Length: 414
Image (cartoon, rainbow, N blue to C red; front, side, top):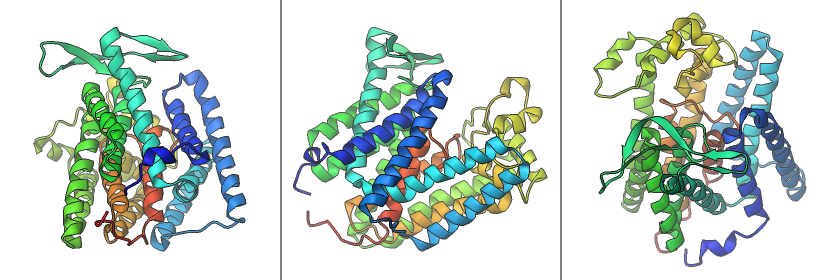
């Protein structure tokens, strides 16, 4: 890629993806009194995107990826059925809206907006908000419109090379993990664009985002950055060597670890996981409670509902109000065993098919962005369903993966 990507990002497409990312961040970070407003704006904006696509495509929607699409339809049907069976009309409306949004993320946005444009704005939006978090370390907490740029209480982060420390930064978000997901994914976007374009602006963004991710003190953010970076490097090496099976080993190892974790929680005594050299930060208590509810509703699940209420009677008082902190378990909770299996199979089908077509930097970067986001679901609350920025970025990564399944044009000579 000899031309600069920066010159391509002052267009209608740029406005659309910038607005999409901004609305998802505001839907996450805004005070609760404003959140419904941003949800409605988000839904309205997605409808405008869909209408724009239908106008320029002549009313036709091109579906790529037969197997992932069949699995997505099956999962959607099960989720709607289990939610309708639970009899909560509000929850049914919510899930229909979320599935509608997911269709736009998976099939419409990637057809409208170039992948590199998505990466560009993900890099810059993340660097801006990460920079605000870093600025709070220098000048202290401050206000930006109706958003507070402040710290998260609790333990402090030491600043390497100094004797100073600071509370964990969170920028505009309610907790450091919200910022860390964004800076982790934005850091990967910056890395990919720097590799493809060699522009130093992306190297600068990458530096900001590495520092910001460290200052969040979030293991999830660091895992996204590290797993994505290692995958990107190894996938390039293995693809250049024409060793496609090596790439499959990477993805299969990630999914194998996720499946073993889920089986350990659902089938074996939860204290077996305490033998692992991993600090689960009280997640085992939440997972055990979630597994108990799942085992009582194996077939149909409990439908889409507030997870914290479903498990509240089974956890100590100090954990009430918390979600399971494992999105795979949440899907099993909502849809039962069949829906949970199909949800995993849907994600695996995209990664598996994508791993067979890693002949260029674009496909390798999509693969490297998607894989850590899949893995982190096993420890956090986001999935591909949602208006929060974590869910939107994840769904878009999958959408671009589906759109590029048939892209076999190599670029190693560039």
